[in-house]
Image (cartoon, rainbow over all chains, first blue to last red):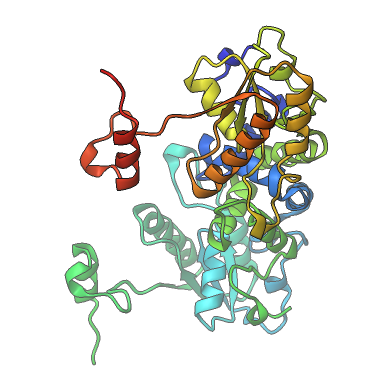
Length: 208
Length: 208
């Protein structure tokens, strides 16, 4: 292979290195330049780390699946939160992503269960109720003694639409739904808060 | 494990996921937050990419070594550039990193050989002549018919010191050394060029 045949970001001396640079670009936010820097760094300074990353990545892809109850990532059939006998089983909090569970666990003292949609309704991208596992949730609502469904989907258009669909589903079974409060972020200055948020916060003002 | 025992960036439901997030942080520029985003992205949207990254990474660490002549990364004993019969063997260009070879190949029509130091002299960090492979280079200078050693180390303090040591080594064998020109970057405005560069460019001015 002549050196001049090479595309952007390719080094002539090792096709395996080029493959590595290419493969690293499957990571979000990593382009050709960062991938090259990562490849050189790993080969030059941290072959042990690279080896163990390779092992863990391989095992993670093979072993990590979704909890059969709440769809969160876990290598067990049912996740530790669902198995935890101390959690209150009458409340289910629905979130879009596993990272949201983690944020709620860190920020609140919520002791109920979760349901992770792994996305939000987006018919144009082919993400419908089936992809979000809504039949599983519907079955849980029918079979378990759920009293409250907390709609903690994102405050985006897709998140609101998803929340609406979820609230209709819960309504059919006579289950109460609640939605996270919208308003001014804590520590936020009114001057820099967007108009929609101000409008929501104003409309939702409470007795002081 | 209770959820409250978790540190920053850990999710309670999968210890393997936590290991993956930890392992991803061996990549340069990747902290806990990005690692978490990467792990979720790979598991949620690109398990195929993750699998092949794991494979390539594993093979790269096992197979990619250094060319015995020029120390560049290659999975062969001697790299394609060193093996290429059309390259001019009387010139060796010394660079600090493999990425520099790649930049020179892209930007110039240089047809000689290379030598990659894999760093620059930095006695405080324990990087001396041995670590940079200078004995290998010295042997090449003694045994091959080298006429010119191009010092293309970085224009930093360490790079300059390294260039100085290299030029002394070449001088002992009566080999001519050249150094990349210093001056105003092409397209640069004088107003925004730093004082040292201006001084070097002024002192090194050429007949127009």
